Image (cartoon, rainbow, N blue to C red; front, top):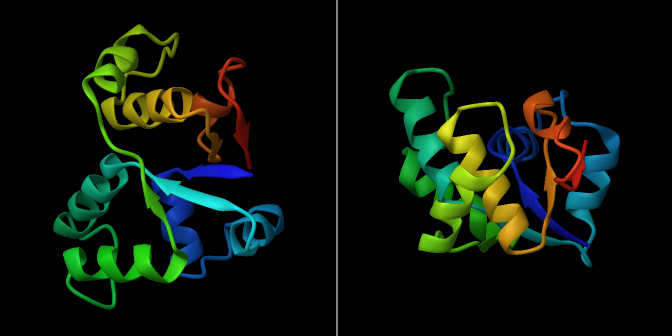
Length: 129
């Protein structure tokens, strides 16, 4: 399985947050699951730490690097095609980060791991919670 981790899923798994479902804990931990992250999620983590919404064990940029290494996560490059697709997809939610993440999942044919109801409600977007 190829999973694109939404920002909150990545954080919940990395920080061992109890909000993460057993299903996703198991899938993420499986050796045969290919994990992907959008650079937008890295950007969101930087913003969340700057605003004091989350606290990390290291400086944010270092934490991101370590987390990606530990989880063996692949970075889904942000392309012009994804930028265009982010505006073309049928998503009533206007959050640009969510639009970029959804477009990334579609572009790279990845299942999106998320509990964001704005994203799970999109019947064209393959999600798992």
